[in-house]
Image (cartoon, rainbow, N blue to C red; front, side, top):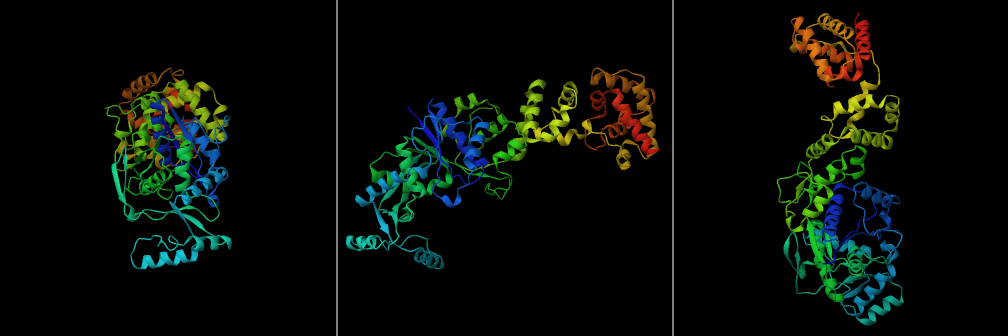
Length: 491
């Protein structure tokens, strides 16, 4: 079976997480059927057009490995992919609807429509067009056209009709035509509305499956009526459930950071985002949670998509990202880090370039099991690349570890200096541990009593890798230097 899916966004802003899932499902389904996925731009609302949004969209899709097979401005350009370039096509088909008495001219002014809407709202009635122009005679219509009265074209919805379609996810959907408004198809500026352009483009571009948000379900009966009016076979529909934030509110620009670009900047692992987004509302019928793109394509099944909404949980995404990070070998991880910093944090990339690669690799190897995303690297490693001598003395005192005052902390710092001066650079964290534990036992103390002030002296932070790991990364000379400087500051 030849399958063509499409993603048809409006060029109004950044690409959002919910759009990414829609793209992903369209992509997975098309590739599973060994056919193609298309990108089309619905730019008929020119007042909301954002110049850079198309470039941003293509860049984001490429970053997430979701490149379409056809897209605007592609080299072979089978047809125009911007709706604003297809106005003559829409005019042709809307004229056909008028001719076949499936649509009609509406000469109502915006003021009249506003007043009608206001009256209906005050009476708690559904806001629908009142058919004021539906029964105009041919002479009345021609007179208004001759006088250049502005008009729109509306769909002529049958009065008594059952409209139904089979949705892959929702099942059979049935609507009474009395609940469907006579939707505007062509606006007064001759630009089509979403409904007309959507149907005409999907038909002419041979789209076989329309996979889109559940919010478009109420519009589908209008589209079915247009397919019937043109004597066209409608595509198969699949309306995927909404994404909600953790508080069960609709995921939107106001609830959290929902731009895909921001997740790239924070450098969540791409595989993790794709993997997590795919599972939001889809059951792969497996106990496995981690899938490659090829595995997702092989397993994806629209019929296994849930009917209910899905919750976007940032903590679950971070868990996925952390798991992917731990699977990478250090060379791959380090190269990813450099790539990320060069693109999103050039200042810190320059800082790292002043240090030996082996030193940088030791740091990221130590952090590998703690990182949830590479965007955390700067915050977690500042003390590895900068020397600061002013430390809050409160950090050194820790009554739980029986370090009740500065003098006790100084005592154990001097012991650490003695240990470091008696040994060459350590070749592993285990070697650091063995040597320090032996000395601490001779001093008849607990490990944490000595290592707590050492850790503070080396990192100046309450939260950091443990002292033994810091010593291994910084080497003996730098570790001794930092401890000495702290002691001078305390004295």
